[in-house]
Image (cartoon, rainbow, N blue to C red; front, side):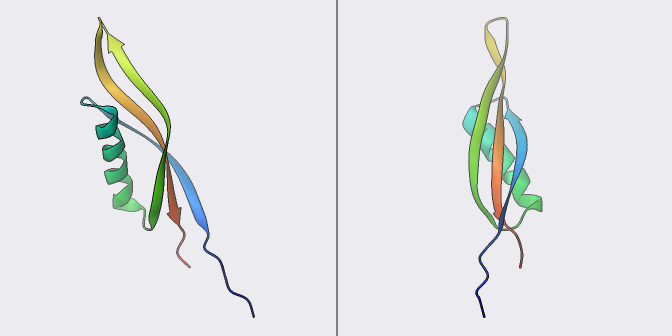
Length: 71
């Protein structure tokens, strides 16, 4: 007789926004939430801004989405 622990998985996604890094993170989270159940956390791995002619065109983030697998 033993008890089973929870098992989690990490999926990497890339999201962007023309507004801000925070908005890019929210875009990624909203999209991940449509297909992944049991999300327990998000880790921002990278941030990148696309720049042209002295202006930021796009904010991009790479996220690790952590979610618990169904038992």
